Image 1 (cartoon, rainbow, N blue to C red):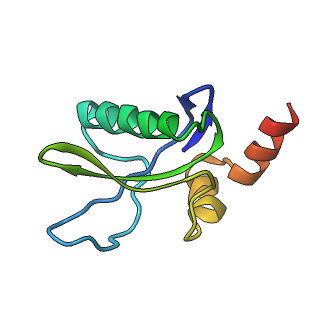
Image 2 (image 1 turned 45 degrees about the vertical axis):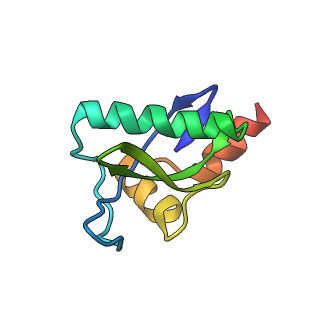
Amino acid sequence: MFLKNFRPFWFWYYNFLPSIYYLGHVVPTSIHVDKKKLLTNSAINFLNAIGLRDGPAHVELRLSEKGPVLMEINPRPAGGRIAQDLLINAYGVNVYDAGLDFFRG
């Protein structure tokens, strides 16, 4: 996720089965729009709670029966070649260049 005044630029979602394990990435997501809004708003609320309003953010949420559960939150681009490969190939966006451009004004 990359934020500019709380406006998300992109997302990716993990699927979690009974146990948490890595399945891979699907971009764009096929998640239902209502769940996407719920997860998006939850991610923004978590970022607001830690005071992050601008710049890259790595947020991992799990959707439980009771709602979104925060798994991880960091003020940095995602790892695992997501920022380096996935976003460039899927959207043509280099998160590092976008971050530098944003902070340069």
